[in-house]
Each structure stands twice: as structure tokens, then as C-alpha cells.
Length: 145
Image (cartoon, rainbow, N blue to C red):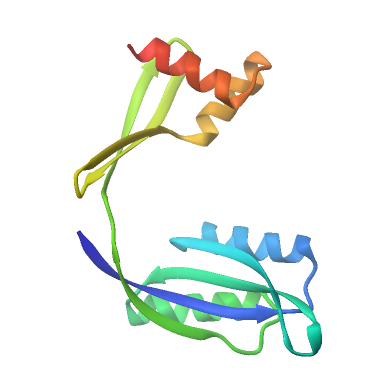
């Protein structure tokens, strides 16, 4: 399966790590498909952060996300790149386990099939049992058999 995606990119050299994290969190809450922050070096050797925001390649969505990026960051310019991407079919499953209900993501296509328990559910179980995420995953998988 293929689709088209818009990637917005901007270099930011005047925001704190906390401010960048907040901006990325807000953009994800607003429905961005993904937000990444990468360290880069700008002219004159200045350290900065490259923010990449992925959204649907639809004019209304692109306009909305451009506005949001300007709202939550100090950037004065945003670059737009339209890409095609190969994606796997996704579906969410809800499973009852001995440790409560967990959400699972199942993806398939191109000769692959994978299954993953949602992090938030594993985190909840790990905290409740005072164990690691890996141990929580093993417990849940065992209870699903």
C-alpha cells in the first residue's frame, strides 16, 4: 500500500529542550502522523534542532500544521516536502488479559506480519507490578496464549 505524505521541516536554534518537547507533544496531540527532533549544526557552527512534522498531503491539513508549527515554535520558515511512502496495513485489537485490557497493533503487507502491544498499556502494567517493560510484555504475551 502506498500513500502521499507531507513533511514539514524547520531548523530551530533558539528554543529550550523543554519548549521543543512541548511543541512536539502538542503537534502529535493535534494529529501529526509523526514528529521528530534531530540535532543539527547550522551556519557559524551553531547547534540547532531540525524539527520534522509529518501530516496528510491535503491542503487543509498542510495549512493547519503550518499554522501550528508557527504557533508552537520560534521558526520563521517551514520547508515542505511531498513524499510517497510504502506503508503496512494497520489495525488495532483490544485483548483481555490476566493483567487487564491491552491494545495491540497488528500490521501486515509486503510479506510481513507483526504484532505489538501498546506502550501505554505495558507501562501501566509494569508500574502496577513494579517490573520492567520487558517483563510486563512477557507476562502479557504469556497470558494471551
